[in-house]
Length: 319
Image (cartoon, rainbow, N blue to C red; front, top):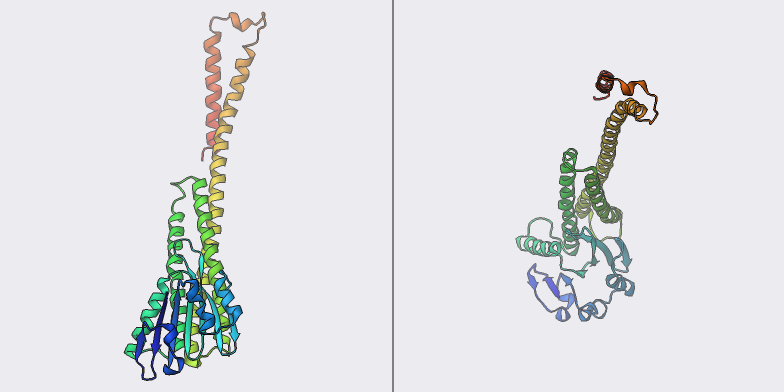
């Protein structure tokens, strides 16, 4: 599907015009959004706009790294949207010129719908920054970046829950959850860091068609990406701390178990020795003929085990 937004020289907004029937000179600027286009619609990138073949090839072969290329009077942006379910990056391409903005994406994106509605509202109200295709491109980028925050906040909530689950879940389950969160943070990082680098290049580029005031807005997006990057690094450090804490907790539990088993084994060693001595099959063993031998040996074994237990307790083995 291709949807169009055309702004006349008088500031009137027209939507839904067929792209092939639009004459650029008749309008101040236009925005054409290729929303999950068919192969026939994709061919209009070449037949109608005459974009560079390499840029069209980048649109067709996803997933490219976020970048900015210059083709004569057209800037070509490769941006990454975020799938909130899988946290995988999904490509959004922009062609920016002084007279048009062309957006191209293979999946329907709610961010693009939000940007589309916001640009129309700003033009109709004539308030805020609604200066043309550069403003529309900024709006698209801003909406894409805004969608990064909820996913990161959700992961931070999961980390906060994991911090208090040390006594409730098994260490194996906790470690599995920590590594799952860490893996999702890595996916976010692979999306956000290249976008941050791209936005830094846009802010400091002399080729992007924007004035000084508009660069402030792009700088604001860059600041958001810096904040996201810092949050991810902090969260990754937190997962490392949780991992180390759970490993230490597991080691302490193992040490406690080994200490208990050691105490039990040590107590029964002399008792086993006594039982082993009187279990030997020698004929001449005077104690075997003693009437009180059995209860006396049991009392000796009980006293020996009890005294060893008290000694271990006083030595702090049970703390």
